[in-house]
Length: 251
Image 1 (cartoon, rainbow, N blue to C red):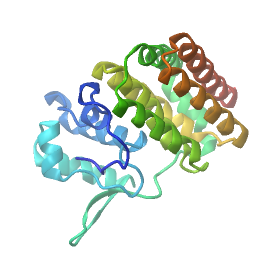
Image 2 (cartoon, one colour):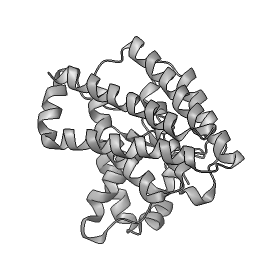
Image 3 (cartoon, rainbow, N blue to C red):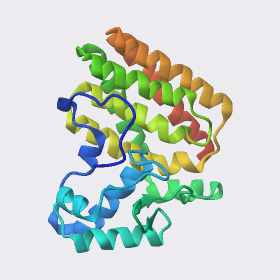
């Protein structure tokens, strides 16, 4: 398993994000998909900086690939600066505390490389996350689900600028998990991973972060009281704002 969360877990039927990311990969591109899945796990903050990844044996079993493939994927990500190994009693494979980041001067280059995929990702995010917020509000959440959402909201609210992106991602994924559809959670995680590299490359603006935190609170409050219309509206405003910010830095 991944590093333990000190928060209530969502109900088993929801399909947790780490379960979805550590699912079997397709045989045709085992190495590439293993690298992709590990990068998603890191970029989405499912295992945060300094966190321990599962053992080679565990990852091989969950990805349904050989340990050689896992070892090669780990080696590639070590070389790229995303993970490191430590020996000894408390050793293992860990996410580096200072992750590689794209230089802000490369934001336009990243966007150009994505091409039309950028607008596609922004559209997908809008449809998926607005729908997820509305669907979560319509669902009867367990006490465990409610506690998990509140805890993720608290973490995303209390966090400083440096760790905001990670906890922002985890909150949005928790909202998707609350719907109880593993396919939806997986889709949200995928599109979030596509956009996070760009989001990491633009400046963190204190006023924008505070506004995002206010919107997060509004979204979760609507979900918890079953206000589907309010959850839809609040998430639509929130996601549209992020899209506008990204486009602004790319113009």
